[in-house]
Each structure stands twice: as structure tokens, then as C-alpha cells.
Amino acid sequence: MKSFDEITQLITSEIEQINWSREPRGLYEPIGYVLSLGGKRIRPALTLMACNLYSENVQQAMNSALGLEVFHNFTLLHDDIMDRADVRRGQPTVHKKWNDNTAILSGDVMQITSYQLMTQTPGKDLKRSLDLFSQTAAEICEGQQYDVDFEKRDTVSADEYLEMIRLKTAVLLGCALKIGSWIGGAGEEDAQNLYDFGINIGLAFQLKDDLLDVYGDEATFGKKIGGDILCNKKTYLLIHAIELARGNDALELNNWLNTSDEKSSCEKIKAITSIYNRLGVKKICEDKMQFFYRKAIANLDKVSVLENKKQELRNLAGKLMSRQE
Image (cartoon, rainbow, N blue to C red):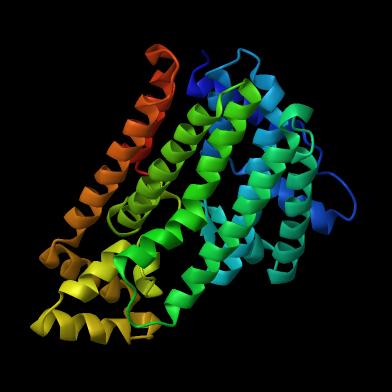
């Protein structure tokens, strides 16, 4: 079995070999830029790790893994435009470094490229992998639309939020694991358990992101701390704060949510974080994150391969829960 580090080294090497020095440069240079920023490479790594549970030949799943990584980064280009985000992985976002039109068009090419890579999935698994990938791509768009819709609503339930992040984030992790396991030779029951592992670890992963956006270290997180607070993003923390706030807390929270003065941005982050602390929503979010983490491990326990083969996935799940970036 290959370690997570060995897997990511293989993926990084393959990504570096993709030639983005093409014409017109204005279309392809931003793609090379965003892929060179690195990131965790979680999705392609899960693809190869799932394949490796059943086969030593992880290279057979490489094109599928790369397709998933290119697709993921395509969604980030468009997400950053929609969120007006200036920083990604500690560097300027594509729409900030170039412009909105460039980020849209380069993202479109990345989506096309992701399908070109996915069509190189081994023939025996091609149709079902493409079907799942297409379903997942549509679900991610559904999740993004829910996220946009939530911005216009005064209240969003915790269950609605969890469904949104399942679609926007978790389904791609599940897809990566299922496709990788199929290519490796897994049976349908194992493939589904690995998919469910991905869904649950993805939900926990996004809840961790919510926490880091408020309580993380900007130097290691790679994005500005408090960004979700400044744009009134309906995170698991804010949803519960709105639900729990009473009296002065409710008045103060409502006042800050209706403040658009950029000069008071630091004060807003500090004030809402203090409200979160008083209401105990950090622990509520942490508890829910642990709930999904435990569910993910229970899914992994059901996968019918030797325990030592699953250890790297267990280790990765633990690292995702303790990460600070």
C-alpha cells in the first residue's frame, strides 16, 4: 500500500507534466497558475487510495484522479468570482490577478479538460464512472445554487445547510472514492461504503472549514479569517447563533448582520466571534463535525479489505479533522 504522501507526490508529478503553455496564453496561463498553487490534492488522492485498496496498479486510475482535480479547481475559479474572494491558497484568485472574464473562460476550459481526462478511465469502468461524475457535477451546481439562495434568506435551517454542503463539497469526495474503487476492482457493496465514507468525511471537512474561517490562523489557513462573517454567509455557526440568540445578543447580532460599512469590518468579525463564544456555537459545530467523522469511520470499517490496507484512509481522515489550513 502506498502512503498518502507517496500518492500526492505521484499526482503532483503528473499535474506538472500537463502543458498549459499554449495559445492563447490569456486562456491557458491562468489554468497553469491555479494548478501550480497546490492545495491538498484530497480528491485525486482519494481516487488513487481507493484503487490501491484492491490493486497495486494505481496508475490505471490516474487520469480519472486528474480529471477530478481539474474539475475541483474549475469550481473554485467560478466560486471565487461569485464570492468576490481575493485570496485562494494564500495567493490572489484568478479573477483578481486577471479579471472575471478570464476566470470564467479559463474555468470553462478546465471543465472540458476534466471530461477529456475522465474519458480515459479504463473501458470496463468508463460508462458508470462518467455517469457518476456527471451526476456529481450537477449536484455540485445544485449545492452552489442553494448557497446563493441562502444569501437572500433571513433564516436557513441546520438541515438545509448540511444538505447544501453535502452537494457542494461532500459528493465529489464520495465520487472520487467510488470511481477509484471501481477501477481497482471493488465490489458494489465496498464501493458504496467508500462513497458513504467520502460523504461523511466531506461533511465533517466543510464544518471544519466553517470553524477555521472564524477560529483559524490566517497565516496557515490561506484565506482571510472572518470572510464568512463579513459577507453574512450562512455557516453552521451563524445558523445556530441566529437560532439561539436572545435579548441583547439577538439585537447585537442583527445589527452587525445589517452593517455594510467596510471600515467596521474588523469590529464586525470581533463582535460576532464574541457572540459565537457566548452562545457556545463553536462546540455545537465541533460536535457535529465529530458526529460525521465517526459515521465516516463506521463506513470505512465495513469495507471488506484487510485492516492494514485501510490505515492510510483512517490517517487521512484524522488529519482532515485536525488540520489548521
